[in-house]
Length: 211
Image 1 (cartoon, rainbow, N blue to C red):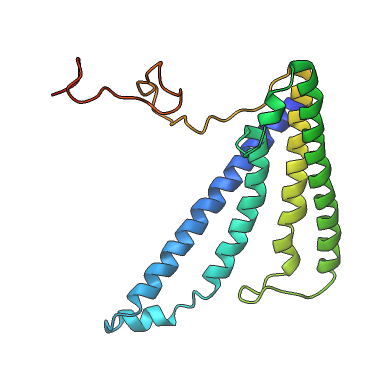
Image 2 (image 1 turned 60 degrees about the vertical axis):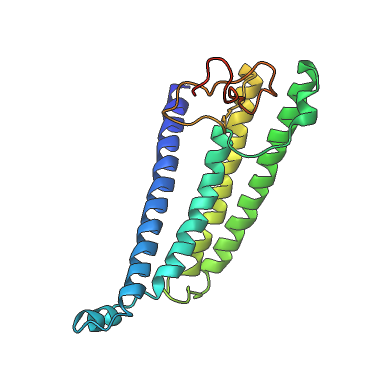
């Protein structure tokens, strides 16, 4: 169990690091490509010739690949942290004894679906690796790009099983509050007569309000 806990912590750190690095590098590449295209339009002697000699036609293709990888691993991160959007109105209206098997069924269905996608993706990548197909601009082997499908879906399947196991054991699901802002500790003032969602502020001229 200790080894599994250590593996999960390492996997969590690797997942977060990979997503952060892909996002940062993709943003940097896009910024450099935009600046290069903008400055190359100015007739500045020497600088324009040098910029036009730089071939950045690969930048768009690379950023697309990086965002695909980021999306696949970001989806697995979303399962682990509970940030995926879900419709749980009917589930929350069930009694706790009935709610638990429904939630477990949903988690296991997600694991089954992503597991099937990972298996088909691995089969596709294997057959693609037997060909000489490459990407248009970077001329990388195409199977390297599509490897995101089995790896990302496989990790997502593992996350579904991980969440299902913890829910079965502890009865708790990962939860993310979309209204929580990091660094903001004090909630906005609200009126008990309000709807509990939108804060109600004192009207101008009311007692205790600013003039």
